[in-house]
Length: 289
Image (cartoon, rainbow, N blue to C red; front, side, top):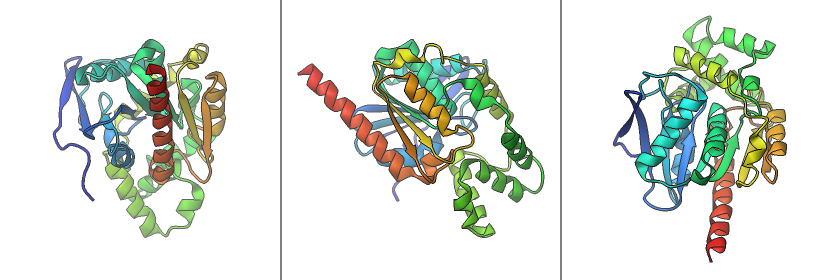
């Protein structure tokens, strides 16, 4: 399969450190994809491969992860500034903004700060309140311990249990789960057996951010909210609450999927995004006419 992501590795300067980004697609409406905790921009590869056929797509590594450096604070506000600076560097006056998990919180704040820069919002497996994403439930405590103790292979399998549904993993033998862990690790930009310190910094940033009392201000923006029915990181109740607060938004719940739905059910996610973008572009064209 050909690689649609540019092998050129451009950066912009942020707080004296490089913010790495990659572009794909030669024409069409612009799309900004914002990742969540512990994932490099490469994690969007299944979406880039589909969306770049008809869109200009940019992915980037949040500060302190992947190929991006870190010399400033790790807060949602600073990550929003990074995303906005990237749009400016590309000369994009606006873009369809897609965020997953923490990236969904970043996307919400970007839209609240500068709604004119956001053509549409797509909020995937994300939160109504940041603290809900950072809350250490008994299940999260158990899975977090499993990701930090035992053999490297066991830690990788524990990570898979956090992002993939039980039924999918139970249908695989150990070799199959280990092969999946290798594939997911390549997309995440790291070995799943390792938990870099930046991940906890991102989780703390998530927990400190709360726009739940003003998120209704996003109601004028075309918004798609997607949850995965078996997501234990961002349960569907979070997506439903978010969709209810953003009046007029569309809510979709994907059965048989968990937090890693953008990888596991990439075709379904890509179809939803394509449809959402097309509807918005059609409305923009009609309004201009």
